[in-house]
Image: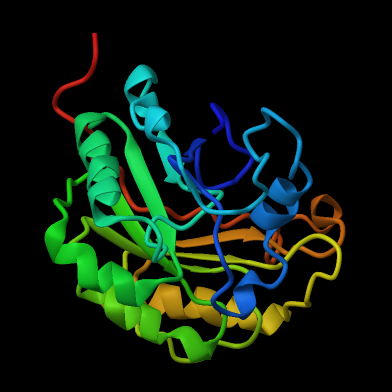
Length: 244
């Protein structure tokens, strides 16, 4: 849980669920797992159980206490649509997002099949953006599943981008994030892969956000592409009712 996030495309993170399991190559060097496992076995620490999946009901109301409108990345340390997260708990998360209507919530999953399965059982308020991770062309099917989800904004994250994605169907997709892997053992990302996705977004009139080049020292590598930053984002839906 963080009042202020270092992630370039959000303001804060909110983790009513922590822990996850790997499902595809993008998970190999999971930053969340690396962080959580550092604390395994330390009594009283939030990650005493490492990266084992855990529900945190007492965190559900946290966004209601944040009075200033902000973008909130939901479950930066997990996946809300993990198979072990019960549907009733997911519904409670959605209820809280609807109640905190002055915020914009960003959800990202690699479990697009379960997302599509559960989507009809959820209420989708306008302040919820739903996204899927697509690290290579082999996972473009996740975008196909996302297209059928009734979210106000659907987005895709190609981070870490592990190969070229030459023909992404961006129909009904409102945003694309691209970034390289960072940290020890980071796999390389070619310049041409990034430029190709940027150009596809330009042709499809989809906002393009370039997060980072990544690498072992991501700060040194920076996030400039062709001499500038690319910070495209969808417009936020402002709630008509805000807290006093």
